[in-house]
Amino acid sequence: MPEPIPPRTRATPDPLGEPASSASTIRAPGSALRRAVSKVAVDTSPLRESRDFRLLFIGQAVSFAGSMITYVAIPFQAYALSRSSLVVGLVSLTELAPILLMSFVGGALADAVDRRRMVRLTELGLCAVVGALVVNALLPHPRLWVLFAAVAVAAGLDALQRPSLDALVPRLVARDRLSAAAALESLRGNLGQVLGPPLAGIIIATAGLPAAFAVDAATFVISLVVLSLMRAVPPAPNAEGVSVRAVLSGLRYASRRQDLLGSYLIDMNAMFFGMPMALFPQIAVAFGGPAVLGLLYTAPSVGSLLATLTSGWTRAVRHHGRAIACAAGAWGVAIVGFGLAPSLWLALIALAAAGAADMISGLFRMTLWNQTIPDDMRGRLAGIEMISYSSGPALGNLEAGVVGALAGVRASVVSGGVLCVLGTLALSALLPRFWSFHAERPADRAEPGNL
Image (cartoon, rainbow, N blue to C red; front, side, top):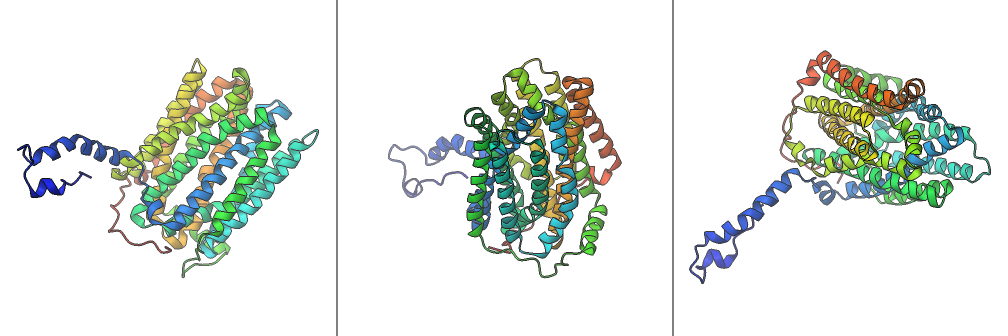
């Protein structure tokens, strides 16, 4: 906003006889710069306006950063024990069945019980799983099967938690702040993804895997304390309760909305064909080990972070379907660049570009979901959303590992990026209402339901 003219200038002439307008003229460049920055900078108003959103943001930021350490440590340990990228992909695939089974249950629970309580209980379970990983890593001969079991249990708990976590936000902030809240949630995740993997590489290289898992366990304890300070978030008065009928009702609602189906399928396509992370441990070995592995995992997050910090412009975009599709196509192009990159630094730049594209897609997907899905359906639809953004990477890592084992790393990465672009074009053509979706402008600001 332009700075007001000082009272002296408004009330009396300038002592030097200069016109009063000159003061504002001098300030104009700075004011214009501030206005320009405000249009692109991330909007922090939800943090200022909602105490519970602020607490949730802090707790999940700490917890997620710790989880990113484990996210790197598990595939590193799996590859160290097996020396196989295919095994790393299979470990990732272990997530799929629990996610498919439990996300519907988690979605129904999110609409039927206190959402904050669900997040707390599942955080406690995840802390126990990480504790088991600490014990396994301390064994003279760690067991590979423990990694598979831990990933499966953690995926099931995450599938129970995620719908409640996602459905919390529309209850904590006003509707016209949902886009800003989505950007802040993305910023929180990006900071964890930027800081977590390099920290994981350092801890693994200096203190070992047990210490890496122990740090993650400690972050869950901090998250549990913060969650206890939040107020309860009871279900909506017209909640259906937990039943097969409620789950099917959510599926029917999603199937009738082509814009929602497009947002799910476009992301699944991009992650299935363009997800080369199962190959990162193998690529890292050629470039120097755990420290390089951390860089590979971090590079997409750096791009995502930059995209989030400059996400203010997204408030003016109304064609969310087109924005999602274009961003998904850009992800595929960047993955092709990563596969063809002749050096580590060019590969990291390509991964950063991919991360930025993925974040833009995610921002518009979250805004579309949060602004258009009614609160009494939000948990069940969040469960469906989780399947879309979780099953794609799990299957994509397997696909990358299989193709990498059969045709080589470069062929796996490049072919996946190309198929991602082609799949995005095909889905956009097959789902015209998704492509043409146009969001309404938010109504006059209303207070959130639970402040």
